Length: 241
Ligand code: SF4
Image (tube, rainbow, N blue to C red; front, side, top):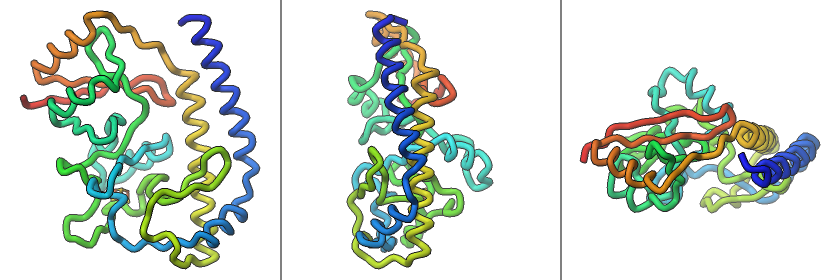
């Protein structure tokens, strides 16, 4: 690892550690009060879970991965590598379209950061019901992002994503629960990112990397290396060409 990269990484880690310290003193009551001012009640439109609603990738924290592992209703591959918005990892043409967004190593593997929830072939979340009710089949085990949508905290400040449920009334109790989840999610994400940087191993690539990737793909093999808070994991899948 070059000295320059190592210094850069240390500076990122120091900035995150400062953010983590500040996150620990965010008053949950203040966040809850802001949520009440904005207002929110889920209208069950399903937009955040469906591909038709836009970017519906559900990023998973380390806590979410543990929850999925203990969830009896979840398949083993409920968590898949985080891929660019719009990429369908079961389609070779879609993978090729997004290839420029990846670092490829000498074994032809695509490097990515973190995990997301599995999606159906149509691009909707794997866990949204098929009966039109838009219910979540793993509601009690849903991820931190799902629990807190359409809110998130960035740089210590409450932010919102697009959602038709914003502006609706919310009770004092529900706002407090939601605010508690939000702060927990924010802290977990910072901790995960610090560990990701600490455990990150530089990607070994060469002029032949793309050629090796193309050879693997023509053999129907798509392999990812996922960098996360625990280090690196390999994820492979067969593609039918
Ligand atoms: S896990 Fe549930 S709440 Fe989250 S995106 Fe999927 S269906 Fe929606």
